[in-house]
Length: 234
Image (cartoon, rainbow, N blue to C red):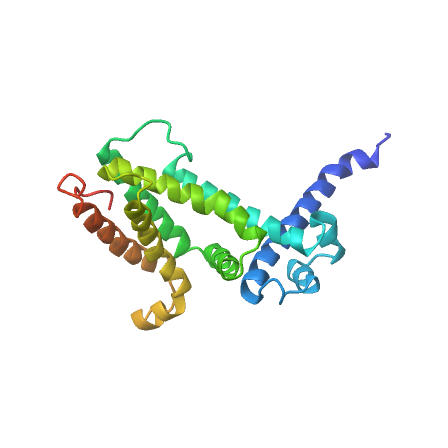
């Protein structure tokens, strides 16, 4: 029986290459966030990924290309999570105030579940914080792919929930406040655990954070008037 070795080997080679690429992205995300771009060598990344150092140049063209790939991974991850709660960046149809409020509560709870409890979120937030401190082209990718469209979409839902203009200064700041209270529980994680007497922040602890965050959102909506203050998803 004649076989052509190259034909059946190709899918496995493709899979292995993709696994190597993925491992390098995760290693870069972790090490760039922890040590900074300049403080991380390609040798360290390759060792963390258990890959040949030459694979960085092969897959990404070098360290800078790997940083861009890590940024793209963040964009893809957050877009997927945000999309599940918010829908597309452009709303297909206007929401009634009650439906818009429910979507705000759902988005907030999903945000807490990922940012506060997910181990992957720690690496993402660390990477982003580095970029915010010393902006590069990677931050441009993250801002254009995640920050701006997600914030804009939340502002749009806020307008539908309250009647306040989506692009007003007040609405933008309100939405930043809603997001910021969640992010603190990731960047201030160690301080929170010490003060709360928690050994970890898992699903149970995240649920407690979500309960307080949703109460805060409910109060913010209530301040906009009786209709906006109706109880949303809890």
